[in-house]
Image 1: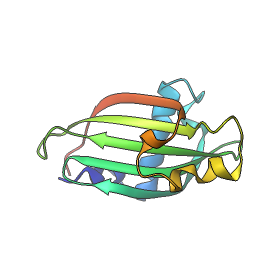
Image 2: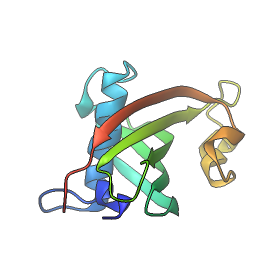
Image 3: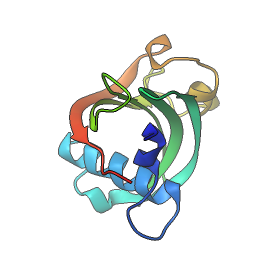
Length: 131
């Protein structure tokens, strides 16, 4: 099973819907958002890296105040057969407190999330649903 299954919803819908739900819930659980319903949807995302044991996705998500936020999600598992994964969510590049074009475009100019500072970094473990 590919890790891209994380992006595939269990029911009808688009991969962005499942990614939106995952990111929103993690931001709520991490105390950044007041509710998992603060999200107003994924603006865009790209799969940066994918293998049988790793998935990296960079994207942008709207909040209900129509502020666009950047994120980078890394999902890693020990072996290709395991359903247990470790994930790290990097949220909002920290570029000196400005909402400039540099901040908006930061995720498009890097190859790995460790190349820039982030306002929030959240980590956890999850179990993928078999498909």
